Length: 370
Ligand code: PLP
Image 1 (tube, protein in one colour):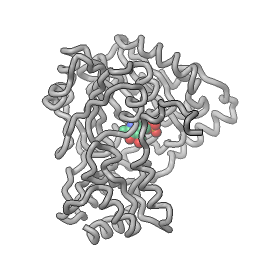
Image 2: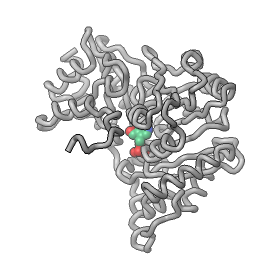
Image 3: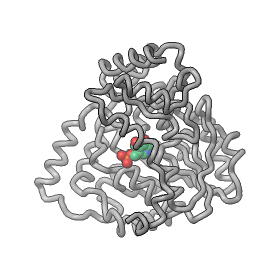
């Protein structure tokens, strides 16, 4: 059968994460600090809104770019943060769906895309699949995507710069100065910026700045998976200024022939999700971050994360990320080797989207095996 498969997916690599799951398969009740999903439930009023939408017959296809009511609600929410007149909104099947369609719409073989390393896995794999060239900005050891580092890698072939703040897997939040500097580079060369701000609400030491404030050619992406724990609902959105309206037309075309539309009753319920106050959860996660920062022994080197719900920690001693994760799994703790998110395998990612009890156990295990 293998010879019948298209070449396309061979350009993608899922072996790193597969190895971890294979190792973890035999664990009975692991301390699982590997998951990128909040441990709280979908807010009750959002669930109720979905039930009401389904029962009242909101079950057909929606317009391809999304329910107008939801798009209006997104614009109302985002207008307070953006200075764009008349922004355009597109509702997607999760931010993953938005990323996939956006890369399909933009990337020709040979186009260069600037990506911070460490990175969220989808960027690299989809760009590779499309024949684009990932140009990584090595952000070790402080994980800051600075204008200087970006300037050093842009070329005439650069089509897109990816920003992810707060970042997965590092938890680093970009500063306004960094974003303004990157916006200036992009503007000077006519490069597009894609800003993945799915963790916007999980920002613990002040608001999360957006490059969209400084640059009109920003493709802004946000979703509902993290702030309302709606990972299984598959809802996200893209916002652009009028200048990038032609991109939205292409996204609609691509969605029409792939996902068709995001799930209609859930789009309806997402209008309620936009109004939910998640500040208590965020405060709770800030305390969990502090618990880890204070609880890990000085054998671990890390940057105190300002957002998201991850820490990206150097493997102690001279161990590779994979070797340390193997040791952790042998001790019933599930974490992810840094090589899954990076061109290097020196770190590991830990998610603190888990109960304080589990985090306490996780800290004990980590300190005992370092
Ligand atoms: N972007 C980042 C940085 C993420 O960490 C994730 C999920 O882990 C996504 C996008 C995808 O989210 P969604 O569930 O909306 O597809």
